[in-house]
Image (cartoon, rainbow, N blue to C red; front, side, top):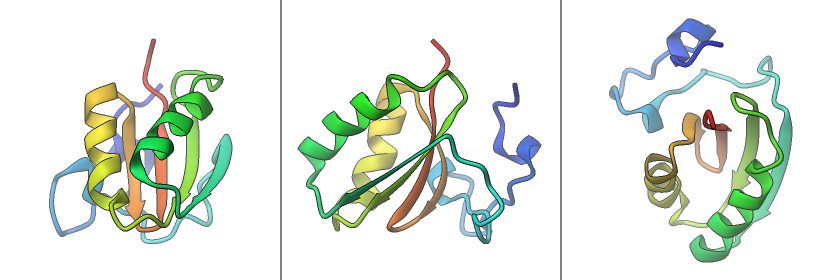
Length: 102
């Protein structure tokens, strides 16, 4: 299993090296294992529900999250760093999160 985004054919956004700034340039061709539209759900409820939605996924599988909350661009990268999940793609309101290894 590839753990580094550049090994998966993803292009790094020239804005920086932070995993949260990586971009695919378009995610249309990327397969996701699950999708969830969280709408305008706030941070506390969002990360609790996100945890529950990632739990049934196998390590390495990808969840496509749509989160329109204005705090999501800061909250989701921080949550991923704390929990060990990998934020593979960010283009608010779309986030691709790769489930961590157990």
